[in-house]
Length: 621
Ligand SMILES: Cc1ncc(C[n+]2csc(CCOP(=O)(O)OP(=O)(O)O)c2C)c(N)n1
Ligand SMILES: CC(=O)[C@@H](O)[C@H](O)COP(=O)(O)O
Ligand SMILES: [Mg+2]
Image 1: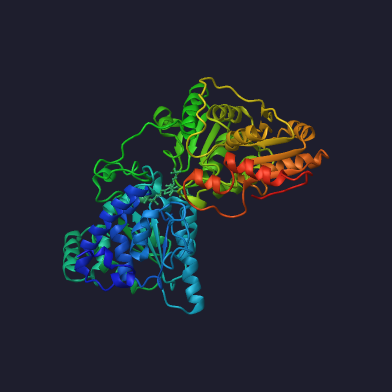
Image 2: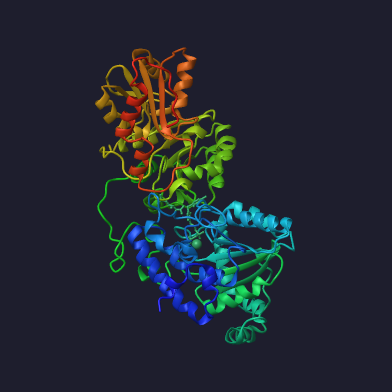
């Protein structure tokens, strides 16, 4: 019998006898592997949550009971069991289902996520809402050990445990991994809990467990008699009833434990131990490689392919080169060692490498502290995750004019991760901060030079660059800087001046060639090359700005402000990302869909300036 195909809704799952849950888990895991190997996606974490997902939907009355996933990259089993099995082949593709929970995708997705450590706060809000509305349901947050390391999670714990009547369950899915190995004292603490708490765990749940499990628990309890009762856990000190750790792949332990907890009142904390990559040997052996995958053949595994140099690799190499010549350089990542290109740096300069955990706010202020003492920190951070640390950027770094370099990876559209991970706002939110320097790299070599420029600049400076490869420009070995605030004209034309920023220089050059327009690589968003912008505006009948970032408040707006301040009134077309969230999909298709490929740029210019009389046009795409 194909069990999985018979489940289109958790209500159907709940009708299964418990002995069919194991075969269901095996089918689900196989389906998951087949499916993700054909679409790409977050594999290891999902292989690890198969049993936990089944048990949660089996025991709780979802969606009446609110299941809130943290990060949401481990929700494929949840998607499969909640009516989206047949759409899994569309995962993370244009028009397909998202790789993360989405409220508009399913009523089982109670809270949209993808940035980490929000689940306890959101579930707490839901638990309070239920009580205020007089509804009876449980709010359940499922959070990983990596996500648990963030301040936000602890803010929520701190707030939740004081309320003894709250119908809240926090499930800690502890697989002893973040994307890379977890860091910090919490990780050590969880490991100690795992080694020392089995007796307490068994004692806590044994009284209401079914036959065989109760017997096992009784034997453990018996065996442990005479042991010193361990002190209260950290989570108990926060006001939670702590249960665990239990084996998160053992349905015979998970289901009765959850059934037991279901009937308990007050904040509950269940510590579940799982294995990242469970059930697929290759992923178990290398959960980092299989954290996020492209398409691959499951019987062979991921085969490293020759590909073009990425901006991330350019950064990683620059960091090592600069660290070799300047001992003050310190590299900081908030839990994104692989994604941000710091693997080699850690190997070569371990004493100057800091993975601070999923803690963007701390990463930035930690950098500020280092800079305050004369070190030269480089904070490697995805544009989207810098959003988490905006106050730290302003209050701790910029306000004190501290010498921190920001390497802003994944600037612009990122593709399959979609709107949650798109780095669309950094231009708008960084350029308005005093003291900040902000550059956008138009090719790989310029990226290296800009990083050197930012590093030598004696204040806060950021370089933004996109996900993946650039135009393929060879990268020099020297560490040469660019003159601060100086743009360059890359193509001389007439009538139209295109002022392009970063990744939009290459398509603008192609559009400029088609239209006979002048094209400038503006390089700096701040300080803007006002002199060149004004001169080009004066010399041309029409001005166009192009950026891979939000048009509102973006680089085009900076040009508009500069022209207005200089009293230059010219028809101005501002191209960039529109005032809406852009979904997941192939990055090239996404850029084309918002008119930011060469064809789209040329078409927009023709469409807006196709009239005989130039007119002032401000477009938000
Ligand atoms: C605010 C934020 N920072 C960084 C990330 C990138 N990220 C996604 S998953 C992940 C690791 C999460 O570890 P854990 O919660 O233990 O889940 P696991 O991957 O082990 O299943 C990280 C760092 C993110 N999504 N959000
Ligand atoms: C879930 C999450 O936040 C990360 O795993 C992210 O998907 C990584 O993105 P990149 O693939 O761009 O490194
Ligand atoms: Mg983990």
